[in-house]
Amino acid sequence: MATLDLFDKERQVKETLEIPDSVFGAEVKTHLLHQVVVAQRNAMRSGTASTKTRKEVSGGGKKPYRQKGTGRSRMGTMSSPLLRGGGTVFGPHPRSYAQKVNRKSMKAALRCALSARARDQRILLVEDLDLPGPRTKEFQKLAGKLGLTHALLVTDEPKENLDLGIRNLPSFKSLPVAALNVLDILSYDQLVITRPAFEKISEVLGR
Image 1 (cartoon, rainbow, N blue to C red):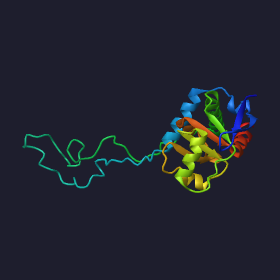
Image 2: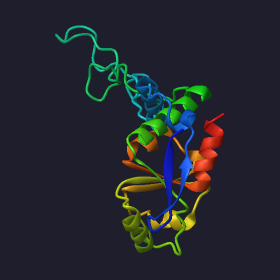
Image 3: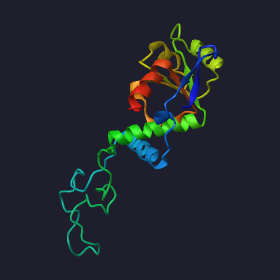
Image 4: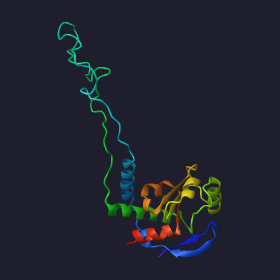
């Protein structure tokens, strides 16, 4: 079983923890990661793009000109897709882009993402990420000591001071362990996990 050092806020090693191979040492299946990432990104799409068909365009009830004798082609309505301002053929309409991913596949993809970060030595275990106040300076001090530059911060529950401390820093994101997902894990160079969050991850994904 592999091990990881547990650091305090001064980046001093407090102890060494064993990490379960079933969670942090699984085979990295890129096709599964791709499937879940695509599903997550599709779920983020609003799907509100819309165009009007010829029946939805206003006007067009009157025949624009007589049938014969003008030398022009026959035209029955001004809402024809052939004319400027007319309806759109095969245009987009509001729809859902959501793709279903089975719960078992989602858990397996999480194990793959965590294993990939562990394999590349991009996981940092810390005792906690509590800040004395909701200030960006406080977090920057902590990030400097821990050597964080582009990181996803995973805690056991939402931390208000931490969320407010990083809201002006696009290189950082904070998540409670219940909201951990593949897309966010792979979107950041570093994965920082607090000890309580690590224990929950090991318990849920190690079953």
